[in-house]
Figure 1: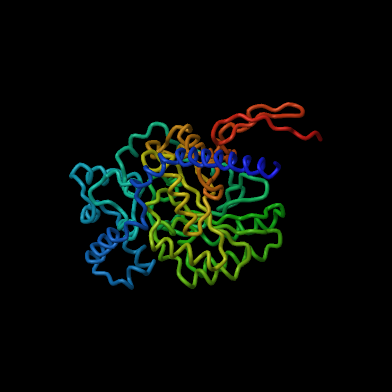
Figure 2: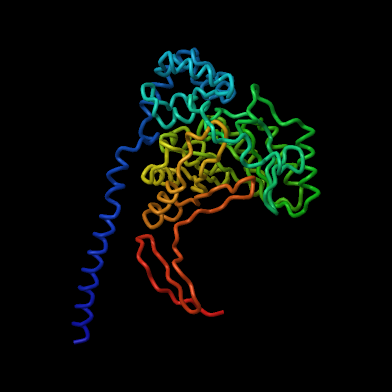
Length: 418
């Protein structure tokens, strides 16, 4: 009789399990259908190759030159007439790009240009790189909403937290993103932070023993030479209280050939080095960017992604889920989703905070935990990163609390007493 009861219970449990599995399958059906229409760079290599060959022909460049990051920098496109050889632009668009260029600098690497849709102005890659007249119509943005100039106790230093700080090492980037938070620093020419300022920043770190984490950024830290990166990491490595070194870069997205073997060897020899990058759309994940990420991962460098929530680019739960899943496939851990800052000239990219919250609701429980970053709002005037989370804790009292799971079901949970 006992065996019969156990068998009967097992059958009932199996039926419950099948019903539950069917519910879970149905809950993800919308995403499974939507993902078929999301462009992913790894699936667009033929199109990218055609664009690449067109650009190479224009510059009369060899494949060896294309793979040379210095060549990519030297041949950045920063003129609307030249740009019109590769993208379909109306006379009005060319006039507007020219006008914007008188106030806000722009340029795009040949590689990143090859990822753009020639015909479609709504291409998510194109919108991040090509100026829009909306930049000039921004009545709400601020030049320095993070008050970086007011949180700089030493040259080239930004300090907002007790145990870590930023050293701004250059204003140079492979491409000047239209949503850039530091566009006020871009200027009209590329320059590295003066040596005296770098030394002052390092001296500040040496004199403040609570600083255990230093982020090298700019601009883009990977736009420094290999020798400069090696020197900076060596200097920081000799400061006993500095435990980790981080480098902020977008070249994995905009110019992945920058990650050469020499750079990987340099990073590999230094301890506790981390790299954070910024993929904003699955279309940016290509064979080339995958190779760059794999090379860094092979060198033992942990990679994190800090996406920016951008209107009509990635403020969609399905797009962001696909992005994060694709990132894990190329050894990049989704780290943050930033709500875009109130930077002058970028307000047209800003979305309601609700968009970010909706994305987080669609990630939790719907995909692996490793694919779920933290949604962040930067508090005004450099007051720190503030996580934005759906309300999973409904209420709490002595002995019990009520929690909400990813399906929005409410459960009572016993709270152990102290």
